[in-house]
Image 1 (cartoon, rainbow, N blue to C red):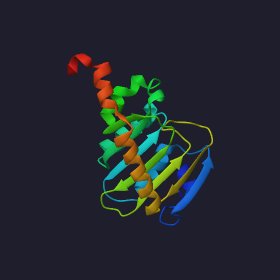
Image 2: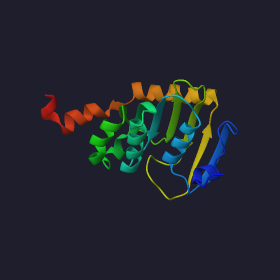
Image 3: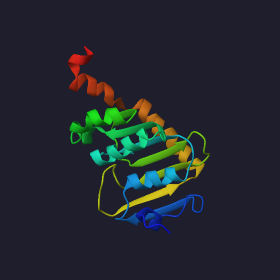
Image 4: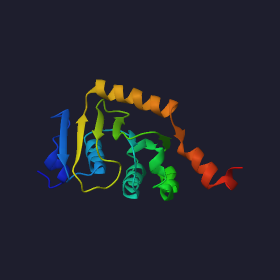
Amino acid sequence: MTNRAVDRVLYPLSDKPLQAYLTNTLQVADVVEWCMEQMTGSFTIRQTSFSISEEFIRRLYHIHRSGKVKDIQLLLDYKATNKTLRLWPFIVQTIDQVFLVDNHSKLILIESDTDPMRVAIITSQNLTRGNRYESAIITTDNEVYHSLLVQFRDLMSSHSVPLKELFQSKLCPSEYT
């Protein structure tokens, strides 16, 4: 048995396709990487969060750069972007598609281009580092995954504004006029 916190809290997805935790020892980025370790292929990661931190973006940056991830999509809350305004350049450089929407959900969907397993993580933790107790449910149930995927796509396409457009028009207007 390994000494990583995630391995002490969670079982392999193939052994336990529905599991939950309530702990202060896991970070959501660790759980995402742990799920990807159990799958093959190149990944698409879809996420919703109220807020995001530089540390989490850095983790995504390294995952993306490793070639394991082909696409990252993120839905963030409008209000939280005021707190993360200084992160906008790093966000648009690291994450392929970022949208702003009225959102408080914390959801991660992980899909591989070759592996039939799909993972849905519904968590209380924002895409930030925290040492508080956080809870999550992790499932590989295809029906749950596809239901959340349809709702994610609807929210992204019908109710959101692309961050790149805001970034270009508000922060870098001279470059794009």
